[in-house]
Length: 292
Image 1 (cartoon, helix red, strand yellow):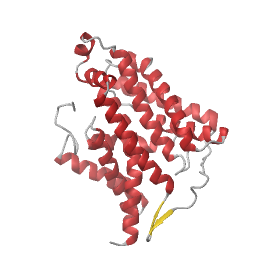
Image 2 (cartoon, one colour):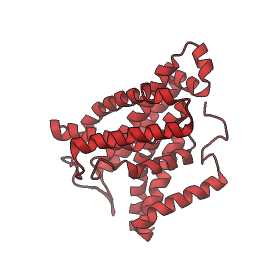
Image 3 (cartoon, one colour):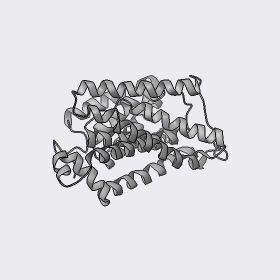
Image 4 (cartoon, helix red, strand yellow):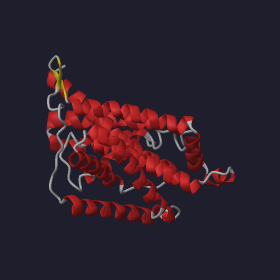
């Protein structure tokens, strides 16, 4: 295999993992609340700027700043669900879409006021040089990001399937009335689930901060891509989101290499549509059943 093709393949796998983590948060929010969150991309950008602000303001390594960003993102997600979103959970779908879109614009404009529209970048000391394996090169930030994605996905899986909070989240997603009759505080559990989804999104954004330049509306470019990955992996399927994210990352990277960057987006959505013709519920979907 051509070394440049192999290099593009590996870059796509590493970036695809970060995309998958962002899509995981979206999938979790939809799986529990049944709300299509159009503020998802903006929340990802908030995670980027939290890591950027902590790193530049306090002079700490962005990977050390990441746990603080996780805490802040959980609080932000919890409050967004607890107040505005909670009141429209059973409203018509277009009301839900408009409200989350409004939240997105508020978050973006807050970032514009605080940080201005200027592009900003974050350099990590000691990570300037890429690692080499034969003729292949690996950006250290991308390798760390992919490793963190695997760990976070595993932690979310354990949280959902090995803890009482996870059982409550899944029960609330499957049957809200039955969950209430079992004594589960559904309102709080939904806010917790939204907070966890925000954490996944914020981590993905934080991991991208040392890799690319950031600006307040950057999340819009990730918004639709996250929807594609979440649907392709089967809504609510954690490992499906990870695999689908890698697939999308590889398609993006290889199409950019062979045809140029302008073809990447078109090919991603073309492959997505073709797969849905064959598998309407996504590659790892289970028909109309929810994952237990």
